[in-house]
Image (tube, rainbow over all chains, first blue to last red; front, side, top):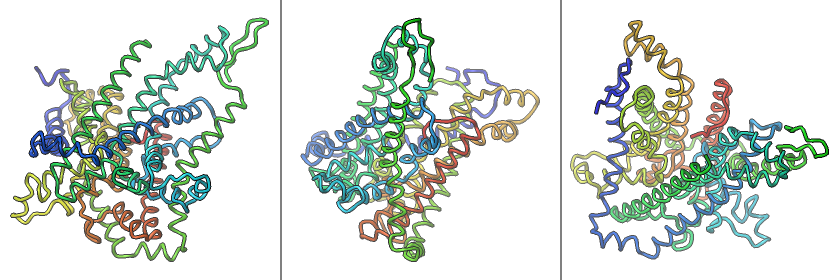
Length: 275
Length: 287
């Protein structure tokens, strides 16, 4: 195995690769490797006990369930936004484009308190919802809103380049052959977008599962009801239960990597079938 | 609206929606985005100024607020340059050379993006905390990492690790290395090539990457919350100060600091728009 495989004339390969590997190992790989090792100081049975607690299972169910639901909401929402941004021209379009990135630029704690202020019973939106009997802040519904907020740009930004590259010819052919616009969208456009929709869903989901800052203010954090898994990790750390915190973190990591791997596989198969 | 010429007797077919549908969808999109994305930003400033300008100024000159702002600047001033050098090195070896394991290296560099912020802090507590692998040893030596500045910096470096590298790698791959190879052939040293050829070519991308890295470094919450220990005036960065004030029901204080962080976000978004305008390319996530 020759490391300098491309016979490049450029210098600096060994130096930069060395810096990269050293920095990466020190900051990312080593700490994560230790995280994987830590839970087992409890023994396998101990790890099982610390995960199988009802409060932990409820938190995991909430974190994964809310993230799946929020990502599912963001797929049609993101499709609408991406479609309008790519296909239509309207005044203020550039401003809207910048606005789409807002959840990525705004610190999560700021998003968290802002959404709480809006949706609390006396907040701008909360006062409108209270007479309808809808409670958002301090309930699982609030968690969903926060996750839709942080996840939306992932779906929009995944879809936009694919929409831009979508050949118009296919739509023209379908229209010429007598398909209505609705039929063309359903039979021609949507199938072509499926892999990208799935990729956007996966990206929003990955973000939602581990999300902390934007959620904890609005969640209410009631054990068994509105307590997310990352918060439980923090609580365990505060009780100096390092192994328990690491066990929960490990379960979250493995589960989210498993889901993402599955979605990647599905997306890859779809893309292959489409071509 | 792109029209395909219709066959005689057949209605002309079109490949876009009717104007009325278009207008409806545009209005719907703007309304939804305004409620979900713009309103939270507006509410931050309205709540900050709820008791007038004086209250905002008082919240800003509060010693704990000043300490939080200073700490945030220090953390960013250390983390961002470290990750800029690391990102440049990674972009050079990945963007300019082909070698086995390159794909894996990119995946590892992007790993912190798919890890919960809480876990990004947790890994350092497991290493250096009171019950951590090295904790007791450090304790005997009198070195404090967790609940102190070094821990805040480590957590921030972990979280912001990917930003510069992942902005530069696609850019450098797209540009190719012909200019740099020509410079080498003409007798330039590696450092000269980097400074005179590469750096000017990637300067906007680099600026963008540094900007994203900085925005995240100053705004990070979950990772630093885990390692901070929440000592007021000592280990509270701005986002942590926001949390503390909000939990104390000091809304003006919380939303004033939040307003500062929102301004940082707005500046970042404006710089992104300006850079895209400059490069003549639109779209792509702020990531």
